[in-house]
Image 1 (cartoon, helix red, strand yellow):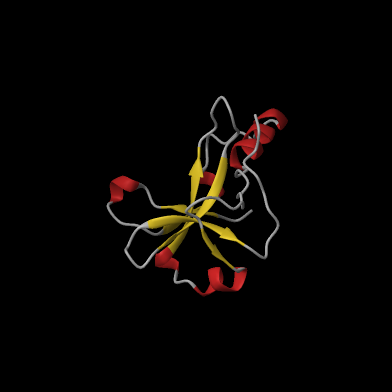
Image 2 (tube, helix red, strand yellow):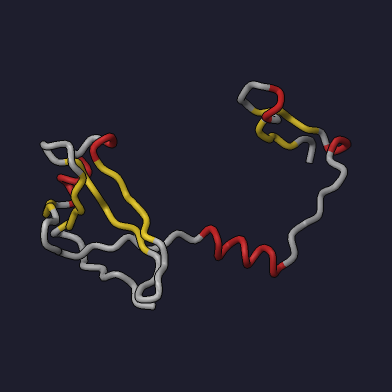
Length: 114
């Protein structure tokens, strides 16, 4: 390894990256197998659900892809006593309100049970 590229320190007041040579890295400890496993579990994102419901906007996968990025999104729902964590699609309507989306030509994925 000849150098490591990392984000600049915040106190420098500018964004970007900087290169550090190995002689500047003094306190590195490789993660243990348990730490690596925990990090992998924490980085795993919940599933995106896709089910029909009252008030949901129904569209195809192609229609979803055509929507501008500013008019659609995926929002997360935290784990509760009754269900696990999940994510769901939303899009903006003509009245500038957000509604949940059901993609008709994709398989139905229900909210995960706890």
